[in-house]
Image (cartoon, rainbow, N blue to C red):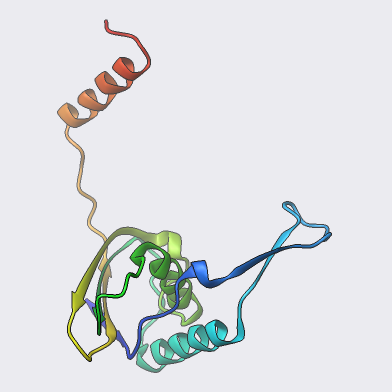
Length: 148
């Protein structure tokens, strides 16, 4: 298992400002990352790179992240995780963030302390049982109005 630390909570991906430009792209939409957010993202990448002494994961991984928060201010871990996934790729820890097959995110509120502990290891797939798959198919038929 590889363990990494960040000295702060990375910014949420929601901190990006959407703008419309008449650009020739698929969506025509572009995003601007405010300078302070960009600096924090670069700092997170730098901190992760300093700790990385192994080859990037190129196979599915399981990731467990503990967010240590200094207060009870609302934070959306899903959006922070999107930024963190990108940082792990740019730092050379993961080849691609779609290699994260299982993730566990947990908040810890400890007054005056802030940071992140990241644990990454190779993913061991849990096989779904035939019963679970049959229950799913039964549910789908019920939702679609087929009660055979």
